Image 1 (cartoon, helix red, strand yellow):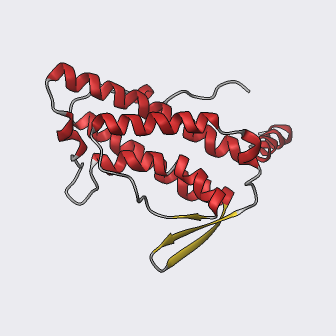
Image 2: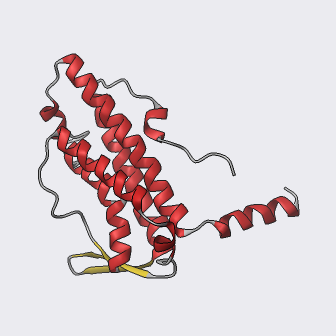
Image 3: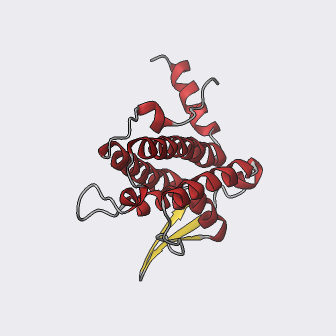
Length: 186
């Protein structure tokens, strides 16, 4: 790699805004989730499978069910932005039990809310701090480190698990369904 190529990579990393690394990634993952949830609903309708069965399905007995995985897709994206704005973030709470259609709506509504965010407002959160609270445990993060080392890995985990439950139930999904709308070009 030439010195110029290395400098260009470094400039690109430095030029990535908090909005791009957070909301840009959240929009992609929620876009994928909308797609795979919609394909799931169509598959269940065509196959005569009751969607209520899916909502309570887990990949393994000690894992949280599809409902929780889907709620976490919203919580680790839109909820993460709200947490950075408030300076505090914790495990999901306050989400009611929903049927499959309710979970689809929850994800679609979160996607719409994320699309409506102003990039400048999110970028103003750069350099701020958020504390993850779980009982007595408090973990301080810079907003950037929270997004990169906590929110995004959790979002990917829960989106993958929800996707995998649908695949396990026979929904014909592929990687493109998961990836959502990719950001291309320069």
